[in-house]
Image 1 (tube, rainbow, N blue to C red):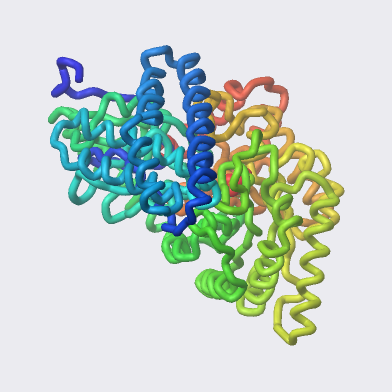
Image 2: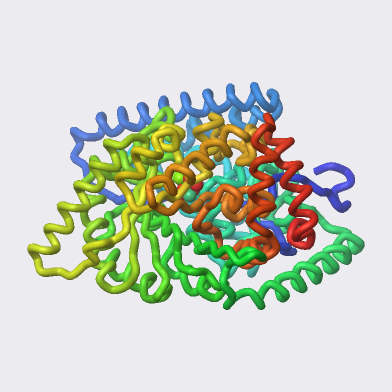
Length: 591
Ligand code: PEP
Ligand code: MG
């Protein structure tokens, strides 16, 4: 700990989910998944030992590789933690004990390894000394890897545990997966801060949906805080302030009060239509990840659900969800938003949303790999029950279906064939459904944007997924904070594609919406209106501010802005033009 350890220290990261919270820190720990205990015969002892050896070799390779990477970017001091991990991995006492028990108890090696590690962890967790307690985290880290390598299918997910701080806290972690975020216990976690991440990662999107204030990209924050430290997390400005001074706390009370006044003022828009100052209507719907979110978005005045990301169920589940269970959920959402529509997106697994068991081995380039519609078209067990569930729900409310990650016309055609087949199956079974259910394609890959005319002839609507469209147009990994500065929807290349897609949709008589995070970006609102977008689908917390922003704009001035930026060559110049307009129209929303 540095000498001034009791002084305030402020760390800047990326603001991903608004809100201000003050609480003690809880460092994220992991709970080892408990392998099942299985009897073995004596002849299996040698193969079990060999299995452990292989897992240790693989783990060693992973740790060495990680050490190399960290050394390159952060220097040898930061990388030295992995030397400690290597020592723990090869700890003779632990390995000796595992071998002895394996021979004497004749049980599977992963279970024995787990039990030996758990015993060590138990004794370390009881120790007061924070340094030794920290070692428990390292041991857990290493053991997790070994267990995953021993049986990759069973241990692809780590559960989070909260220990050490009673009550509510700010969770600090190196990273949180979307499934970690989905399983956050809101009774305890007031907000979270991570070392890596970006504002369009699914973790960030989830934090916004769940209204959890969050800051990511805080680099090496874990070396500066400890469980129990008092912090203030500022999700508006991307700050984590450790041991905030009285002065800082007082200034945050003022900021909180200002935000509360603004939120209160926006509430009056809840039951109003979404239209520009000159009366042009736009549908403002909401994005949800879980059925239970629908009541919250309804309270915020959403005009339906424009994107139901259905894959998050799989973030925590290893088994497929039954058709009936899916139907029930979709019917619930459809009923809640009636008479408005819910657009259900078929599962978009892959990329940063992995399903344990289905994609056990990490792919070399997950965002360019087996993702979205590609998974669905090959995995009937996932796709077909979901299509039937969506169709069955369409008999009970206004339901649309859309397919993610479409890169070519063949894919949308194949998806439609599957839908037709499932319609026929339901007809044969006498099950009612909406024969005219609207079918959409997500436009989130540049090839799809360039082929928008051809795709438009296949579907009833487009939903532009700008999170991926920006990622794939600019070759900028959406979850990597090191390239986050390049991730800009105002990049002229991205804007050209969006404009082109909306025009192609209208030329072919279909509507076009935007459901990526850009839809809620108030700096971009005038441009989206100028492009003629028909629908914007945003997170619950953005609904009312987008409605207010739209109400202050006139269509002609938005169209003029589109003309003005058409000759510009950089994101910075485009953003400046947009800023000039929005600061005149709704400055209070931009602070
Ligand atoms: C997008 O890509 O913009 C989108 C809405 O889908 P997701 O963020 O789930 O990839
Ligand atoms: Mg996407």
